[in-house]
Image 1 (cartoon, rainbow, N blue to C red):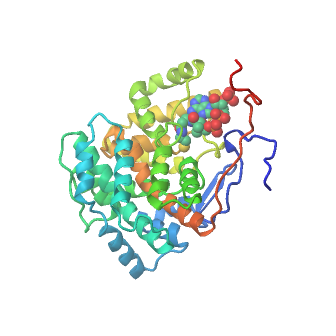
Image 2: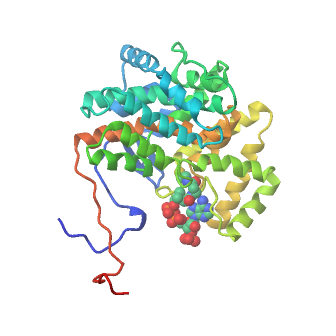
Image 3: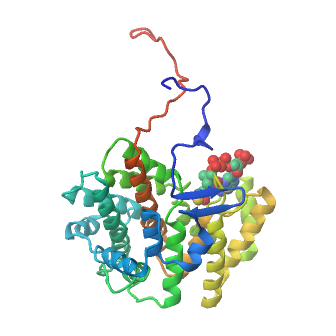
Amino acid sequence: MSEATEQVISGLEGVLACESSIAYIDGSIPELSFRGYDIHDIAQTLTFEQVTFLIWHDRLPPAEELRAFSADLAGRRAVPKPILDVLHAMPTSGHPMAGLRTAVSMLGAMDPGGEDISPEDNLRKAKDLTAQMPTIVAAQARLQRGQEPIAPDPSLSHAANYCYMLTGKRPDDTTTRTFDTMLILYAEHETNASTFACRVVVGTESDFYSAVVAGIGAIKGPLHGGAIDEVMRMFLEIETPERAAAFVDEALASRRKLPGFGHRVYRAGDPRATQLRTMAEKLGVASGDDRWFRIGTAAEQRMREAKGIIANVDYFAAPVLYHLGFPLNVFTNVIASSRIVGWSAHMLEQYAHNRLIRPRARYVGQRGRKLGAN
Ligand code: COA
């Protein structure tokens, strides 16, 4: 078909842009699965390393293979010195996602195999970036606070090492498990805007790093991953659970969109939010201050009553990261460094079955204008 169809689908809502066997979503139930396994089972049972392997290879690794895979990832965490130099050179007032975007682009420029788009080398890059993005995020977060970056510890799991590099403290088992689960919940989500951006770049047969840079640019936006930073700012602004309902009412009256609410696909509830709600509550109770959880549930209830709009994944993920002691302005960076797993799987899938992604626009401008005539 070479001619465009007449209908413009606003925001490409409901459009099937490709075939994929990575994540299944049924927003009406709601249901989310990775490679056929339900997200609730995955989140309760598996580790980030297992889920990464599953998403990339469509099977769960036996114990020995998992050990080798985890050690392989852990061995790739260190970043070359010029990357740290670039982060040092970043203005401390700059957006942390700009730092991540720049560092990943620099990694691509430094990689001798950067232009190799063979499946083997792309899988190697997926492993490198999954291992290195946390190192970049943590280093930049520390530099922004006037602290020196902490070198990765290969003896720690992916999640434990990430917490350690960010906070300087080796996390306890509960912290590690909580953060590991959060990373799993963000690891993949079908053809969301950033994943689609990655697929569009791959569709031109450009290189892996260029596609990841596009993904980072897309997830940074406040309608996508950038919402998580905004959620925590909103909770801080609300301040107390008693003020939550009035805050929601005022925001809706001024037609302000509230971060952490609404979803293009889930209209009946986001299954990831169910997990994160419980995690936020547990962390709040354990810390002796469950204010953020109570603000969250109060505002969520008001939003449901007023508009029937659901809380999405970012809503309770924000207080989870806040309780874990992560700096507020790197929340989006953290979720991007998890979503690299899903981006990579989609890019590998797109390279393997590629056709240029090139939609049409319905032209609504003028035609037939003559130069020289006003
Ligand atoms: N706050 C207030 N109203 C919202 C809302 C929000 N967060 N999200 C959706 N709505 C309203 C819209 O204004 C619209 O109302 P209307 O029909 O009276 O105009 C209705 O709900 C449908 O929303 P729509 O804009 O068509 O949804 P979408 O599918 O285009 O957008 C999002 C989805 C996620 C971009 C949108 O819900 C949003 O901006 N959410 C806040 C940002 C966010 O949390 N993003 C992370 C997503 S995981």
